[in-house]
Amino acid sequence: MEKPVRERIVDSYFWKDQCFAVNEADIIDRVVEHVKFVGGTYGDSQKPSPFLCLAFKLLQLGPTDDVLQEYLEYGGEKFKYLRALAVFYVRLTRKATDVYLFLEPFLEDKRKLVMRTRTGKRLTFMDEFVDSLLTKERMCSTTLWKMPSRAQLEDEEKLDPRISPLGDIENLLDSEPEEIDGGDGSDGNGRNRSPGSEFGEVTPDPEEMDIDKEDKQRENGTATP
Image (cartoon, rainbow, N blue to C red; front, top):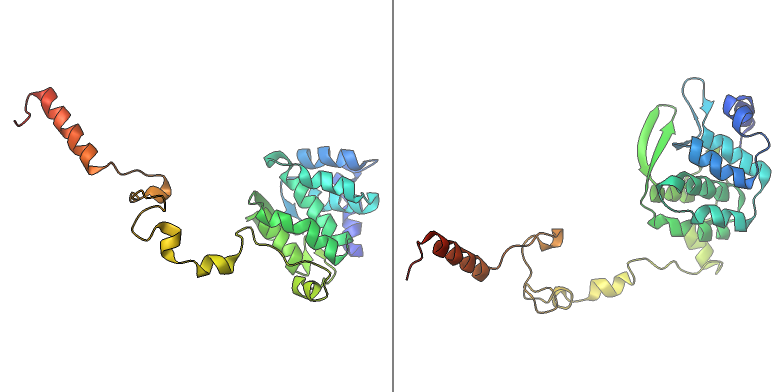
């Protein structure tokens, strides 16, 4: 972190009130209680956010990989900002191969985050935040060290190719439409698809509709012989 940012952090009320004599375990409680958005400094006075203050505290504490992994594995809405703090710290302190290995699994995390900048708040998502850490040079009022690209590390055989969660895209694209959806309007299992079924909607079968109609006519004494 740049010196002016560090000076604002240590002069802030949050730092003096919440970050004194804090250890790795205390960080969890501080994040859950006080961190409601990710960001660096904000407002005309460039006030440091609790997120940035706690990131600076982690830089002082220097948690081990085991501690970081524990932070990252906390799930649910309650701990999403703890994960965001941990991935930010990893990006600041670990070598490139470790950054990719630590952060890439969370490109599948779709939880919402609030991002606060100097101009205001906006909605973002965990996967977007992680992707920005992997691709941008500045985040949360902090200059990130320049990492080699994943492709470069793969060429140097320092990283294995990343497997997409969708599987082998080439095989999926090469598949004939008939193989995927039955080719005759069926769902691949011999059953005809109902319009809107992809959204969980069900259209009644025409024969079932006729039966219901006849039943109602009998009840009303208007059935046709």
